[in-house]
Length: 214
Image 1 (cartoon, rainbow, N blue to C red):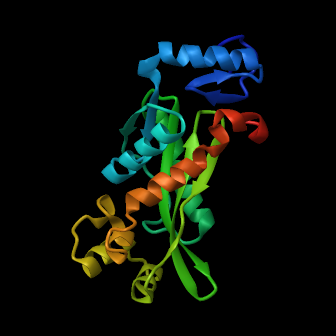
Image 2 (cartoon, rainbow, N blue to C red):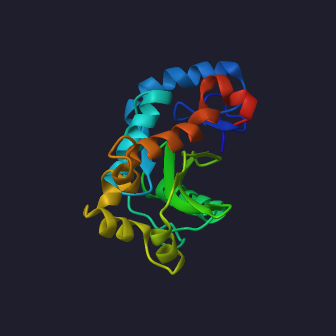
Protein backbone atom coordinates (compact mmCIF):
# COMPACT_ATOMS: atom_id res chain seq x y z
CA UNK A 1 0.00 0.00 0.00
CA UNK A 2 1.38 3.44 -1.00
CA UNK A 3 0.93 6.86 0.55
CA UNK A 4 -1.85 8.62 -1.36
CA UNK A 5 -0.05 11.96 -1.02
CA UNK A 6 3.61 11.30 -1.90
CA UNK A 7 3.68 7.71 -3.12
CA UNK A 8 6.03 6.33 -0.46
CA UNK A 9 5.16 3.23 1.56
CA UNK A 10 2.02 3.80 3.63
CA UNK A 11 2.41 3.29 7.36
CA UNK A 12 -1.12 3.97 8.54
CA UNK A 13 -4.57 5.12 7.56
CA UNK A 14 -5.95 8.37 8.97
CA UNK A 15 -8.94 10.47 7.88
CA UNK A 16 -9.69 7.61 5.51
CA UNK A 17 -6.43 8.20 3.62
CA UNK A 18 -3.38 5.92 3.44
CA UNK A 19 -0.25 7.94 4.29
CA UNK A 20 3.42 7.61 5.20
CA UNK A 21 5.08 9.06 8.32
CA UNK A 22 5.58 12.56 6.88
CA UNK A 23 3.69 15.23 8.85
CA UNK A 24 3.05 17.21 5.65
CA UNK A 25 1.26 14.18 4.21
CA UNK A 26 -0.79 14.01 7.41
CA UNK A 27 -1.99 17.59 6.90
CA UNK A 28 -2.75 16.97 3.22
CA UNK A 29 -4.65 13.82 4.15
CA UNK A 30 -6.95 15.89 6.34
CA UNK A 31 -7.72 18.22 3.43
CA UNK A 32 -8.22 15.31 1.05
CA UNK A 33 -10.62 13.57 3.41
CA UNK A 34 -13.03 16.48 3.30
CA UNK A 35 -12.81 16.58 -0.49
CA UNK A 36 -13.62 12.88 -0.56
CA UNK A 37 -16.53 13.12 1.86
CA UNK A 38 -18.45 10.26 0.25
CA UNK A 39 -15.51 7.96 0.88
CA UNK A 40 -15.74 8.44 4.63
CA UNK A 41 -17.44 5.08 5.02
CA UNK A 42 -17.13 2.57 7.84
CA UNK A 43 -18.27 -1.02 7.27
CA UNK A 44 -19.51 -2.87 10.36
CA UNK A 45 -19.34 -6.65 10.18
CA UNK A 46 -22.96 -7.11 11.23
CA UNK A 47 -26.41 -5.79 10.38
CA UNK A 48 -27.35 -5.74 14.05
CA UNK A 49 -28.71 -2.18 14.48
CA UNK A 50 -27.19 -1.85 17.96
CA UNK A 51 -23.70 -2.62 16.61
CA UNK A 52 -24.15 -0.15 13.75
CA UNK A 53 -25.46 2.65 15.96
CA UNK A 54 -22.88 2.08 18.68
CA UNK A 55 -20.09 2.20 16.09
CA UNK A 56 -21.53 5.36 14.54
CA UNK A 57 -21.59 7.12 17.91
CA UNK A 58 -18.01 6.03 18.66
CA UNK A 59 -16.61 7.30 15.34
CA UNK A 60 -18.45 10.61 15.61
CA UNK A 61 -17.06 11.11 19.10
CA UNK A 62 -13.44 10.27 18.21
CA UNK A 63 -12.86 10.92 14.49
CA UNK A 64 -15.88 12.94 13.36
CA UNK A 65 -18.61 12.12 10.88
CA UNK A 66 -18.52 8.85 8.94
CA UNK A 67 -21.22 6.97 7.11
CA UNK A 68 -21.56 3.66 8.95
CA UNK A 69 -22.95 0.69 7.02
CA UNK A 70 -23.74 -2.75 8.39
CA UNK A 71 -22.87 -5.76 6.22
CA UNK A 72 -23.57 -9.42 6.87
CA UNK A 73 -20.39 -11.46 7.40
CA UNK A 74 -19.27 -14.66 9.09
CA UNK A 75 -17.31 -14.50 12.35
CA UNK A 76 -16.00 -18.09 11.90
CA UNK A 77 -16.15 -18.69 15.66
CA UNK A 78 -18.72 -20.34 17.91
CA UNK A 79 -22.11 -18.62 18.46
CA UNK A 80 -20.99 -17.53 21.94
CA UNK A 81 -17.17 -17.38 22.08
CA UNK A 82 -15.39 -18.42 25.26
CA UNK A 83 -12.20 -16.63 26.27
CA UNK A 84 -10.48 -13.49 25.06
CA UNK A 85 -8.66 -15.13 22.14
CA UNK A 86 -11.75 -16.64 20.51
CA UNK A 87 -13.74 -13.46 21.09
CA UNK A 88 -10.94 -11.36 19.55
CA UNK A 89 -10.69 -13.74 16.59
CA UNK A 90 -14.41 -13.40 15.92
CA UNK A 91 -14.13 -9.60 15.95
CA UNK A 92 -11.06 -9.67 13.70
CA UNK A 93 -12.74 -11.98 11.20
CA UNK A 94 -15.81 -9.75 11.10
CA UNK A 95 -13.67 -6.65 10.52
CA UNK A 96 -11.57 -8.17 7.73
CA UNK A 97 -14.56 -9.78 6.01
CA UNK A 98 -16.52 -6.51 6.16
CA UNK A 99 -13.58 -4.61 4.63
CA UNK A 100 -13.83 -6.84 1.55
CA UNK A 101 -17.59 -6.39 1.18
CA UNK A 102 -17.89 -2.67 0.35
CA UNK A 103 -15.67 0.31 -0.45
CA UNK A 104 -14.73 1.82 2.91
CA UNK A 105 -11.86 3.46 4.75
CA UNK A 106 -12.37 1.48 7.93
CA UNK A 107 -14.17 -1.67 8.94
CA UNK A 108 -15.24 -2.73 12.41
CA UNK A 109 -15.79 -6.14 13.88
CA UNK A 110 -17.54 -6.51 17.24
CA UNK A 111 -17.87 -9.77 19.12
CA UNK A 112 -19.36 -10.52 22.53
CA UNK A 113 -17.76 -13.34 24.48
CA UNK A 114 -17.48 -14.83 27.92
CA UNK A 115 -14.26 -14.83 29.96
CA UNK A 116 -13.48 -16.64 33.21
CA UNK A 117 -11.98 -14.83 36.20
CA UNK A 118 -11.59 -17.08 39.21
CA UNK A 119 -14.94 -18.81 39.55
CA UNK A 120 -16.77 -15.97 37.80
CA UNK A 121 -17.74 -15.56 34.15
CA UNK A 122 -17.89 -12.08 32.65
CA UNK A 123 -19.41 -10.96 29.36
CA UNK A 124 -17.28 -8.51 27.37
CA UNK A 125 -17.39 -6.94 23.91
CA UNK A 126 -14.20 -6.81 21.83
CA UNK A 127 -13.97 -4.42 18.88
CA UNK A 128 -11.44 -4.49 16.05
CA UNK A 129 -11.00 -1.49 13.73
CA UNK A 130 -9.26 -2.42 10.46
CA UNK A 131 -8.00 -0.15 7.69
CA UNK A 132 -6.70 -2.67 5.16
CA UNK A 133 -3.21 -2.52 6.64
CA UNK A 134 -3.45 -2.77 10.42
CA UNK A 135 -6.01 -3.50 13.08
CA UNK A 136 -6.48 -1.83 16.46
CA UNK A 137 -8.35 -3.43 19.34
CA UNK A 138 -10.56 -2.33 22.21
CA UNK A 139 -12.60 -4.01 24.92
CA UNK A 140 -15.65 -2.95 26.91
CA UNK A 141 -16.26 -3.16 30.62
CA UNK A 142 -17.41 -6.62 31.66
CA UNK A 143 -20.42 -7.79 33.64
CA UNK A 144 -20.99 -11.05 35.47
CA UNK A 145 -23.22 -13.66 33.88
CA UNK A 146 -25.57 -15.61 36.18
CA UNK A 147 -24.40 -19.21 36.52
CA UNK A 148 -27.74 -20.53 35.24
CA UNK A 149 -26.86 -18.91 31.91
CA UNK A 150 -23.14 -19.76 32.09
CA UNK A 151 -23.78 -23.48 32.43
CA UNK A 152 -26.02 -23.52 29.37
CA UNK A 153 -23.52 -21.51 27.31
CA UNK A 154 -20.76 -23.94 28.27
CA UNK A 155 -23.02 -26.72 26.97
CA UNK A 156 -23.18 -25.03 23.56
CA UNK A 157 -26.27 -22.82 23.78
CA UNK A 158 -26.23 -19.26 22.46
CA UNK A 159 -26.21 -16.51 25.07
CA UNK A 160 -28.70 -14.26 23.26
CA UNK A 161 -31.33 -17.01 23.20
CA UNK A 162 -30.84 -17.70 26.90
CA UNK A 163 -31.08 -13.96 27.64
CA UNK A 164 -34.33 -13.78 25.65
CA UNK A 165 -35.78 -16.64 27.70
CA UNK A 166 -34.76 -15.14 31.05
CA UNK A 167 -35.77 -11.55 30.24
CA UNK A 168 -38.81 -12.21 28.07
CA UNK A 169 -37.44 -9.65 25.55
CA UNK A 170 -37.47 -10.88 21.96
CA UNK A 171 -34.30 -10.11 19.97
CA UNK A 172 -32.71 -8.71 23.12
CA UNK A 173 -29.26 -8.77 21.48
CA UNK A 174 -30.51 -6.22 18.93
CA UNK A 175 -31.98 -4.02 21.64
CA UNK A 176 -30.78 -3.31 25.19
CA UNK A 177 -28.90 -6.59 25.55
CA UNK A 178 -28.71 -8.78 28.65
CA UNK A 179 -26.81 -5.97 30.40
CA UNK A 180 -29.80 -3.67 29.82
CA UNK A 181 -32.15 -6.17 31.42
CA UNK A 182 -29.84 -6.77 34.38
CA UNK A 183 -29.28 -3.03 35.06
CA UNK A 184 -32.80 -1.73 34.35
CA UNK A 185 -31.35 -0.02 31.24
CA UNK A 186 -28.85 2.03 33.23
CA UNK A 187 -26.24 0.43 30.96
CA UNK A 188 -27.25 -1.06 27.62
CA UNK A 189 -25.53 -3.16 24.99
CA UNK A 190 -25.07 -0.08 22.81
CA UNK A 191 -23.09 1.51 25.63
CA UNK A 192 -20.73 -1.48 25.75
CA UNK A 193 -20.35 -1.51 21.96
CA UNK A 194 -19.66 2.21 21.78
CA UNK A 195 -17.14 1.88 24.60
CA UNK A 196 -15.26 -1.00 22.93
CA UNK A 197 -15.07 0.82 19.58
CA UNK A 198 -13.83 4.03 21.23
CA UNK A 199 -11.11 1.98 22.93
CA UNK A 200 -10.13 0.49 19.56
CA UNK A 201 -9.93 3.99 18.06
CA UNK A 202 -7.52 5.40 20.68
CA UNK A 203 -4.38 4.51 18.64
CA UNK A 204 -5.96 6.22 15.61
CA UNK A 205 -6.42 9.60 17.27
CA UNK A 206 -4.14 12.14 15.60
CA UNK A 207 -2.07 12.83 18.72
CA UNK A 208 -1.48 9.09 19.23
CA UNK A 209 -0.44 8.00 15.72
CA UNK A 210 3.30 8.23 16.30
CA UNK A 211 3.03 6.86 19.82
CA UNK A 212 1.36 3.69 18.56
CA UNK A 213 3.32 3.66 15.28
CA UNK A 214 0.21 3.17 13.21
